[in-house]
Structure formats: structure tokens, C-alpha cells
Amino acid sequence: MKKKKGEVPGFPAEVKQYTANQKVAYVGTGKKVYLTFDTGGPLGDVDKMLKVLKDNGVKANYFLAGYNVKAHPDFLKRLVNDGHLVANHTMSHKDMTTLSDAQVRKEIEDYAKMYQDITGKPIQPFFRFPYGTYSMHLLDLVSDMGYTSVFWSTAMRDWEPRANGPDDSYNDIMNNLHDGNIILMHQGSEDNIEALDRIIKGIKKEGYQFGLLTDFQK
Image (cartoon, rainbow, N blue to C red; front, side, top):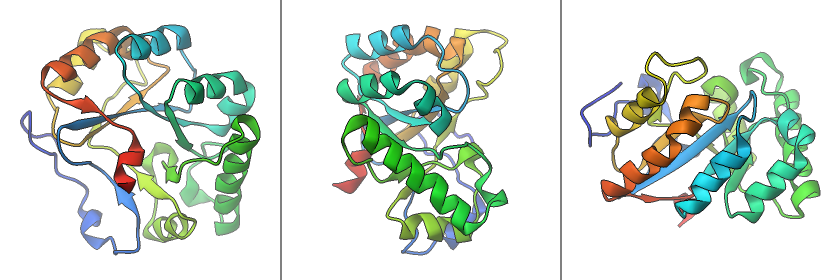
């Protein structure tokens, strides 16, 4: 639920049902913003995106579908070498609620193995459910595997062209900016990438720093 700028939005009612053993993140704390890119679809203009991040000295968090990593292993290497965090987003990007426990575990374990095979490093213990679709049982399963399930406190309807183009991308974020903001953007959106430099500069102007999900482990 949207609230005024500076206020943390309301979250789904089931949040109240979470147990202490379920590792879940919807929002961080303090004057930090967590920029997260989901890439279940096209990669978009990778060179432009990475240049904007580098030019602004910003590290971002990526949830790449496994099939995109398999098709573009060099992109994963570029992200890791640039200091960005790449987390587990399953191999197939299927709705996990339609799979068996064994299938879900395989999706996550195969992704972690692929990541290590390509980068030579173990994957960070963060996970995002494709489409944000989950169950309490799956939260338990993922938590038991050692992962924190990362959701978001700002999401944009960015999988389709926006009426006002990049202006809509910018305004969606700036009008909902708040402490610990976990922002969900889709990398394949041309509007998002076009607005990215303006978004980053606007967030910094409001006094925020950009964080990696590993901040949650501190």
C-alpha cells in the first residue's frame, strides 16, 4: 500500500503470520536504499545500465533468472567483477507454488551450483520468489536452506511501456522514497534504464546511500 513520501508502506496481512524462523526482508532501515533488478525477461541495454551505475558509484542487487545466466554467463561475471550482488532467482523462473518441494530445492540448488561454477564463488544467501508468489510452507523451506527471501517496499508496473515513459519510472520511485527502501525494477524496461541516472541522482539528493543486501547480515 502506497503512503506519503518518506513513510514506509503497508505490507500484506500475512506478514503478521511470519515466524522467527522465517527469514524475510521487505524493507531495510536507516537512510539506505536497496536497488534490486529482476531479470526474468530480456536483459535490455546492459552497457548503458552498468555505465550509469559505475559513473554514479552505485552497487545494485540482481535477481537473474537461471536461463538468462546460462545464456549470458559473461554478464554475471561483469556484475560480480563490478561489485554488484547477484542472488538466487531460480533456474526456470516458474511459479514455485506449482512445484513440489523437491523441485523447488532443485531449482535453488542448481542455481547456486551454476553461480559458483561461473564465478568461482559461493552465492550470497538471498532469494526472490518469481512473481513474488509464495506460501508459508515455501518460506519455511527456503529459510531452512539458509536463504533470506527478499521482497520489496516499492515496485513499479514496468513490464509494459509507461504512459509518460522514463518520467513515470522516476516519479514512481521518488514519490515513494523511504528509509530502507527495497526498490524492485525490471532490467528489461527501456524506461527504467533511461531514467536510471536521474533516479540515482534524485535519491542521493534526498540524502540516501545505496546498499547491498549483505547489509542485512550485519
